Length: 198
Image (cartoon, rainbow, N blue to C red; front, side, top):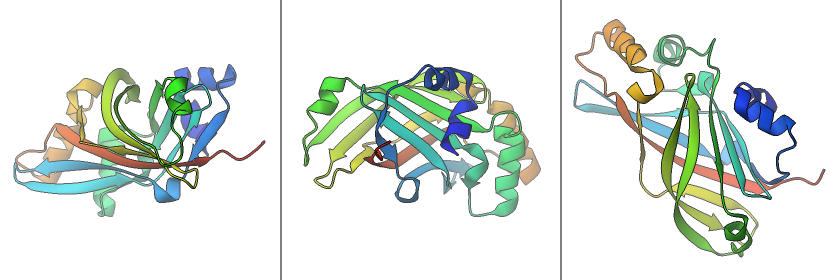
């Protein structure tokens, strides 16, 4: 599945087909989470999530993450369907993709038990738009070999920056709301396990 999701964005598909770095850590989707918070009518905040994430950290520091936008989970089925059709337009844009690069020397210095706090510059491809995003993260290399990457504070994503403002307005109208926030805080807790031997 991860190949299908990542290949949905041409740039990442080309990178993989060109023989990108062998995965050193692979994302454990079942123990990972990516959440965002929406605010409606200027007062009601709700937390939502995406259920399907796929990604890896390569031996050369390449970082890739694919988010299946159709897996959005707000806890209300009709709202999920509206987000898929009216906001994310998943028939045309099935996934959001994140790509970045970590200095291999930093990875090499991550001995078991090491905790690193840093700002990770990544490229976010969402709804046909690419933009650079800075993600403040805490990286924990556990003694078991598991690598955890956790936001140290929320990453703010603006709907206008990714051509999603019209979709937000459409959701607001169909739901009969006075307002929906157009900038949302995103948090994640990504768990990477050592890649399986080929």
